[in-house]
Figure 1 (cartoon, one colour):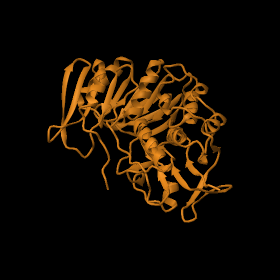
Figure 2: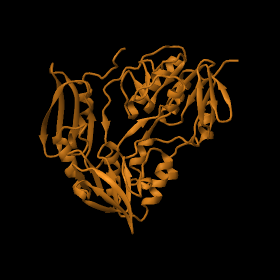
Figure 3: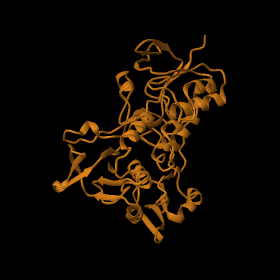
Figure 4: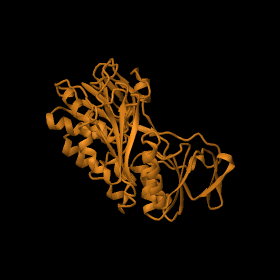
Length: 385
């Protein structure tokens, strides 16, 4: 009997990989394991569903029975994997042992908990999956003042979504303008102003040290002992790859699970992809890299060994108050931003020392230039090891 390909995880990574495999091979045995209920949904929708008046129950597009039928797969829900026994090529769950031919770890990432003091730390909200979002929506119902910790992509998208629905939103970040790690200051400032005009209050250059329960909500203690009173607090300070299963099973890890450009881990026939994987030194928490990885890995798993080669992958912010598109330059490339345009319609190009365009950022009406600029940017590719 042919042993199955086993995928751990039913997030976008796990399910998109399964879909790509089925495009190439309709019959290879496929087992997918998940700790949740196996519903399929697009995680990026979570930060825009308030504006769209989309109920939590409307976000999933297929339940586990539908996915199982579509993928011709054995999908096992509420299943916790304890260990990967790579010498025996078996997975140990709390209730079973499963043999595999090839194994893919797609365990995603978890939110980073802010290191705060106070008696309300456990009541800080975060949204990383559908269950989190359901709890978030329940808690903010009839709440007015919401604080968001972090002015990165997730924090800004949720801030825009909340202001669109009448909430008084406060964003706290030690940076000096939003999306500081991704944008040149000129674009960051026009983005800051646009969301301020939409009702958002920024608190830049400040850290939160404590969160304590108050009579009607919470008191956040900021830098210089400033106190911000709010009804709910959300943390959006970042994600950390879920590497514990791999690490405890003898798979090499760093920030993420270490894989090469074929998504192979340090263990033969064990692969990793998605938010948990560090692909040739890169951990990218976006959908586009995931899709490229799924397409390449599906070919490898069905007999056509294929490298992942990343093209230029712009990120389109879901912030209608100020449209932004970002194609970030590689962090190890030295260069400089050059900005042109007027008002909120700005184009920023990142030139390296050899005058190559290595990244761009667009705002306002300039976002229509995205496809043209993609052709001019040096692709990220992958660093060969």
